[in-house]
Amino acid sequence: MFGGPPPFKKFDNGLKKPKSIKEVPSYLGKLIGGFFSRYAYIFKLVWETSPLILFAMAFSSLFNGVTPVLGAFVSAELINSLVDLYHGLDVKSDVLFWISMQFGYLVIQGIVSTLYNAIIRILSEKVVNHIKVKIITKSKDIDLAQFDLPEFYEKLENASREAGFRPVQILSSTFSMLSNIISVISFITVLCVLDWRAPLLIIVFALPAAIIKFVYGRKNFLYMRRHSKERRLMEYYSSVMTNKDIVKEVRLFNLSDIFIDKFQNTFKRYYKGMKRLVIRENIWHIIITIVTAAVNALLFLYIALNVSPNGLTVGDFSLYSGSLNSIIGCVGTLVSTTATIYEGTLFIDNMIAFNKVERKITPILDEPASVQRHTPHTIEFKNVYFAYPGSEKYVLKNINFKLNGGDTAVLVGLNGAGKTTLIKLLTRLYDPSEGVILLDGRDIREYDLDELYSIYGIIFQDFGKYAVQASENICFGDTDKGYNEEDMVRAAIQSGANDFIEQLPKKYDTYLSKFFEDDGTELSIGQWQKLAVARAFYSDSDILILDEPTASLDALAEQQIFNEIDSLRENMTTIFVSHRLSSATRADVIIVLEMGEIVEMGNHNELMALNGKYHELFSAQAERYINYLDKNDK
Image (cartoon, rainbow, N blue to C red; front, side, top):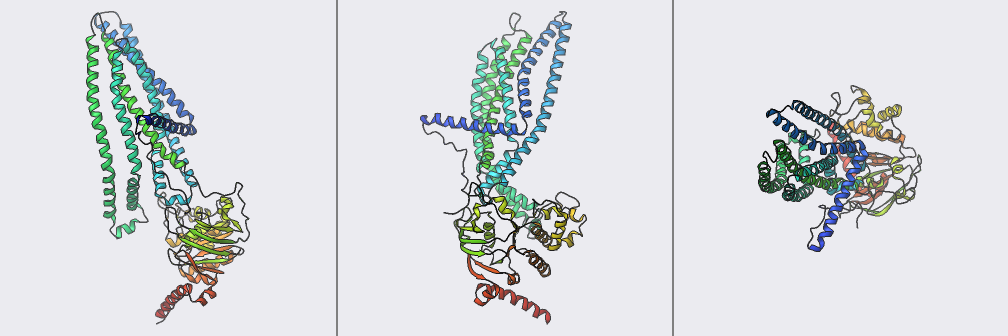
């Protein structure tokens, strides 16, 4: 019924458990298919960043898979040589040789490990950056309506939190697993010379641990996903305590303890479930560890009992027991690594889900229409209704009006009347739930979006306060124009911002925040508003929209800005939202909104003659001014 994006599908990586034996093959097929689909996405992400990281991992995997077997062999031969030397045999050259081999093995292993860690550490930063750029680039193309949905923030939070480090971790774990597989196969080959049943027992008793890892890996993923809200709440409560714009009020109203308690209570709820999961998982691991340790002890005893003058040598015992130890360690690592990979691919679903968010605010024509520039534009709303996503309450109802090119219109009404929402529809940040908006006689949805946005010079009520230089804050008004010093200074003079900018330590090069620069400057809200007006004046726009442009300015500054607007708006359609109705007296059209509906429309004289809502609002403000003047005269 209503416009806006479809809600996110809440999924728990949503495979339903099979209810019968017949459903098991299908379930396993989807499980495995989903795993490899996610894994391919991860591989693609890392390859896009740097193929070198994959080559480094592949080399390390092969190297680390083979060298433990070589190391065990060298150690066994060294021990045998030392035993022969102990018994008086002339084997000093053999001992020296095997010590040299041991030294060389350790040096090469250390160098390769150091180089690998350095390469991975450097390239991992590139991967994290690449993924963050993908997230913020995707955010650029997401409809504003999505930002009204809690589910969107859940996906964004999960994607931002997990996706940065998971891909490298997963691929590193994968190549580590390959190393372990190579090592396990090599050590099994060695141990099978003694008894093929020994490695088989180790693998069989590792299976329960693998099952526990997979089961609780999935449970951990689902818990993290379902409790994203708690993490976002904790982040919010923490930010309230550290946000410079809020902290003054927090201190004066003594709100600190309230938000600290909210943070602690939310953490307790989140922590309670997480702790329960961890405890249950590790109880199972303790039981399995005790059983497998007993089996491993019996295997070591079996090898030790075979050491004899006519049987195994001491070096052989070192080789076989080392092989046994390595198989135990490698199998354990394989189990945990496989579980880590599986769990990591589940978490990467967060980013996949985020990147699948489709943009709905797009041109409805295959070849979008172009917007005529630097010409008067007509604007028409026809039977427009609008409700925000997730709500069934209309914010705007049956809106109908037409503005001719060059008209100045003022939107009037109490807070919540729908004035700012109307502007969001006009600028196509949202689409109407019903009805149509026409620009120059065409459905606004037919135009190319970038061209459409370029015709608007706009100041929103909650305008941006960017922690960059004063010059950049103004030039952001028209990024296509770039930096034009003459136009920038002119815009600042017209808005009244030039007066205080010239008093700043570095004038237009001053950073307008102390967040990042020690010599930055904090502006008052009135100064920020003048800067926002300068941003609108800097833009090469055809339609000027000012949503409460002078709310934080004094009467003289307001008058100066309106005078400048009058001089600028030749052939320019201008729309104001203002609670100071003195600005409405010079408008061509005044649109009075109440509870989302147009209740009156006309110029100042016409609406005053109606003796309706506008007359009531204007008279109330005029009476306040008259009373103030009378009081001061006395």
